[in-house]
Length: 280
Image (cartoon, helix red, strand yellow):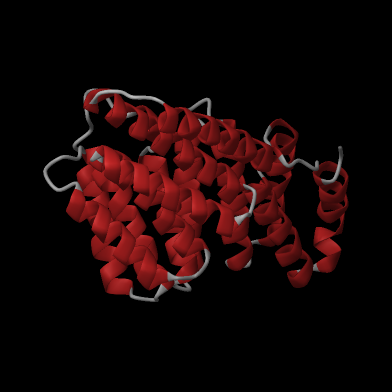
């Protein structure tokens, strides 16, 4: 399955931002409208950054998040700032920059102190936890993930729409990734299974695909190759329904991990991966 949907969405968002910015320069309006325009531009730039990130275009993603952050600051929108910082912290972890991830997430926590609900607070603490895990700091990771779990108990009556993806399963998925970073694959498997159980109770098929890939990689790291292949097979069942170069890259890495560990046992899975993942 080949797709550049993320790149196309990012390009579409860029055209929209250019159009609105051009209109803003030509028009006269009051402070309230100006603030609303800055917020709208910041939200679109934030989405453009995520589309680019999902497509593996890291420099472009950072450009759009920097743009979004500028507009969020102009709008004095602390929650939008936190949303962008959350994405930037996540990107830093993916790139292996644990210290930067922690610093960014902490900045978001500081700027939203007294203004954030439990869901946003939990998300930001998972970002801190992952940053510490990338750095191999077990104790600080454990304290941060515990704080995320505690904050999540303060669920808001009306969650922010962009946080609709964030559930207890997201905390478990972060824990799984952290345990892999920390060299504790058996704990990672347990956390990944918890995450999958939560996401399977939702209609979020993209998240379910990611959860199967994550579990497969944790199982492979733990040496449970047959179970890892089974998880990979379930991911392949979902792959034609989901467009995400980033998740596909994770599935490809799972295939490679399995081939490295047991070429014979992984041969059929690898053959099916090639057929499914490269179809038009």
